[in-house]
Length: 108
Image 1: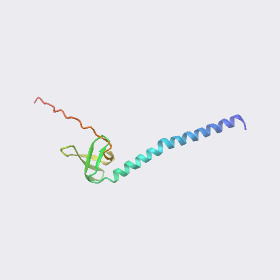
Image 2 (image 1 turned 180 degrees about the vertical axis):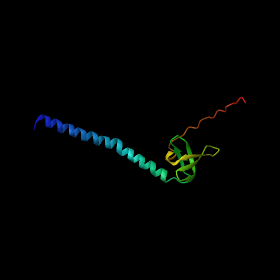
Image 3 (image 1 turned 120 degrees about the horizontal axis):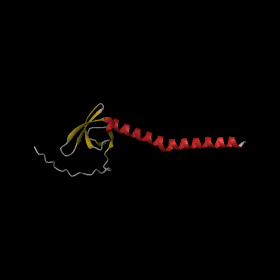
Image 4 (image 1 turned 90 degrees about the vertical axis):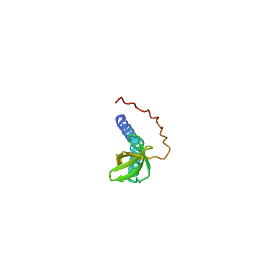
């Protein structure tokens, strides 16, 4: 076999290996995460604890099509967020730090 043909075969094998690595390490995990996120968003129920892309932790108060009403904080403030903004259920593993609130004085 000529040397040029062997080199071409080696490059073809290297290309196939690189594509396989790309698929295994990037495409498959991304698809898995996307399916998991979509299943969480479709399976939302009132009363579930969730968090959003913005980092807001809350409890689902109501569902209306593409919108979710979340109750957050001690005063149970209600926020309307898009369903696609819900990342996953808050399973208690993600420890959210409570921030100390500082009163702001206004000079009215």
